[in-house]
Length: 465
Image 1 (tube, helix red, strand yellow):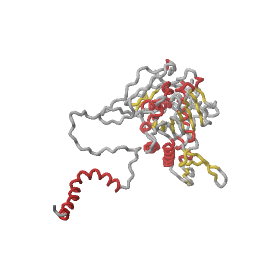
Image 2 (image 1 turned 120 degrees about the vertical axis):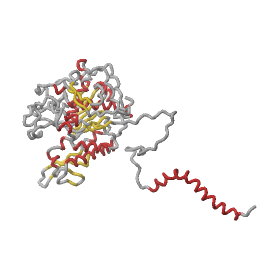
Image 3 (image 1 turned 180 degrees about the horizontal axis):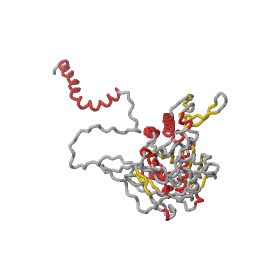
Image 4 (image 1 turned 90 degrees about the vertical axis):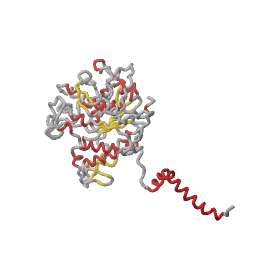
């Protein structure tokens, strides 16, 4: 038997030989761990990306026994149909019902999927199914929006429905809307434009209630400009539709100068005091916009405050961005997408000629939607800010982007057919070309909310209803 010293050189060769042979097999397995340990970057947020596809995949020979995969499509919303309404509760009187046939599904794109931008379309005349409630019949319309009762002689503005270009909206069904809300709370939070939409929603849902006494304001309040909180109960569905006034979604305040005079301020880094009411609501619809376009808010002089800093001069658009980020942080922290749906309604177009609401602007005499002009393609800079902020949120907020569809409707405003607080018609020197007559344009916004709840997946916690 050879001595141990004679075997030593061979033993020394074994380890290097094994290392060389195993490199092609071990290196691919060890490389991810080596790269991970050598990198100090954090992984991508799971809320943004779960998987990164290769930029240019290598070609491979297809297996003839395996069928090809379906083409990748990104549908806006799955083409589902709403559940049938309960037979015991009619949607509306027969004379106002829509055709019984279901609308066709969204158009197919070239890849075989469904694509549709609900906000790309036009207004279509609909004499058969519009308005959704007769003018003067709904007791919840603020007198400032009750144009027919205030003497407006034309009625064509009530007979238009919004028609997306590449698909049809689900046929609106007020009974099914209430069935979807059974046991839940829907709350609109914002300025008077959201109160305009709130009143519209009350009126279209009221049409599904045979016994109108089964719907009431829980505090006994009558709708008025002076009150900022309403809760309407629908007894047969155990649900509520609520409104909370919040002009900016962030906190309004006052400061006192050396002469003890008070001046308003806006704390753009603090959420509005009404936020305590927003928690645990099932469907929230937010808006803010019109109060940022005039007065002290637009000028930004000694008005915007962050922390202890009161800015002597500040750009209103940047303040709007920071305020929305404050709101977005609150939503991300306090709302659960498994339990709630959150909408943000975009800017609603005003149609003043020759001035603004407080400087001689007018829109009287308009009886038809506009089909051309610069206003049709306009898109406010603040809406770009909205898209940017929502796009970076963790919570999947649904943008109710009504800006473009309201561009057309110069005919839908109260103009001289609103009423002032004293009960008199507003003067022709101060017309309302911002809000909307009811019935009218805000009815379409609520139809779009219904369509979103029908077409897009609902929170998991809603399954038992």
